Image (cartoon, rainbow, N blue to C red; front, side):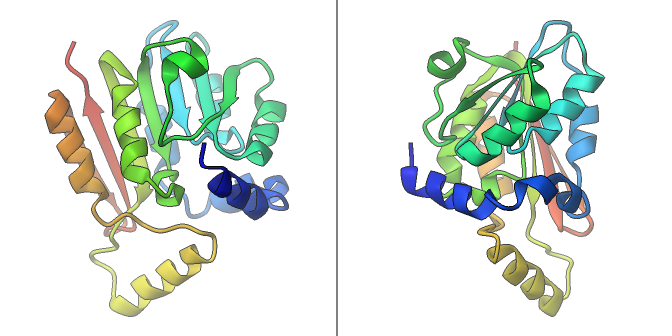
Amino acid sequence: MNTAHAGLMDGVYRWQTPIYDLTRKYYLLGRDRLIAELDPSQDGGVLEIGCGTGRNLAVAASRYKAARFYGFDISRVMLDAAEAKLDRRAALAQADAATFDPQAVFGRKGFERVFCAYTLSMIPDWRAALTRAFDAVAPGGRIAVVDFGTQRRWPGPAKAALRAWLAAFHVAPRDDLLDVFASLAAERGFHARTRDILGGYAIYATAQAPV
């Protein structure tokens, strides 16, 4: 585990967890659409990479009552908040997304649904994390990612202001995220689809695994 990054994340969120969910709902766009489109089968395993406070898993668990939910985060502070919120509705663990092994952490080889919601922009080795996420998708399953985009249709000053504000929270949009996502999908024979949110403010990408 990247202990330095774990410590940084604990420091960033130690005093934010009580207000985190309330404040983030205004700018972490696309999360609820992602959850609404998960549509796991009965008893299907759903994994969130970088589950944070457990907000997304709680929403998904209330919507898909027959599915099984799993989540992990590198921050112990965030996991404490998630455990208090989810109780027994999800299996939770502390793990590093860049080195995640589903068999070692949860005793499973793969999951029917795997998703990352505004986490890759905070993970130093995000390419390794995305690769691990793809590898955790079971045959016939699906991966979904929503995160900050390139803001390609935004005026220069607005884009610069947004990125400066995000940097204060140790968030860095990954400008080649869609390219890396598409490449990983093609290598594995996944069928990928991508969408822009608000002129590139964020991106929403999904990829369906072959059976």
